Image 1 (cartoon, rainbow, N blue to C red):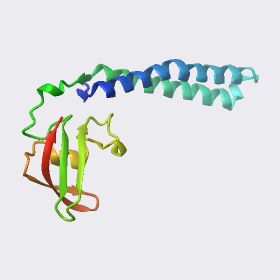
Image 2: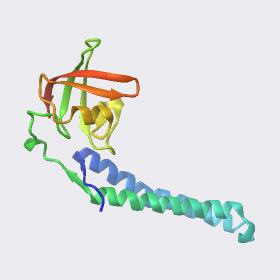
Image 3: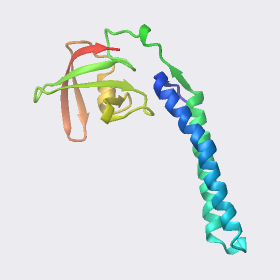
Image 4: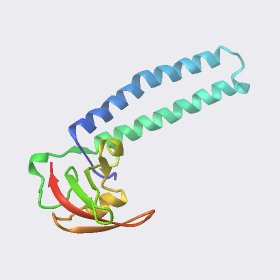
Length: 157
């Protein structure tokens, strides 16, 4: 049984668009590669044909996995989130205890994580370390570079 994947409406829409593109454009491109490889003659010794068929199998596997992710995705109603603690889909403002620098992150599912837009996965070390923390609490988080301490300044939607 696959695990439930909590996403934003925006994230679910992005996954659906990615799936649609693979089903249409991706399949068409692979089909064209197979057709071109067939036209080159003997299939038993045709490396291009073998590669195209393998690419087709990989694409179908990706499509299947994405269909499962979408099927197990649940859009969270952010109006019902408990803002007294850090949860999935909450935005949290943090202060690095060591250098005083403030950062803000939104905790999202692994599929939606994008550090450039301030979205970190709840399964990442920082995400795991922040879950359940309240405003004013400090989280000591083990990261590859050592232990980082963050003070939770604010929790919003």
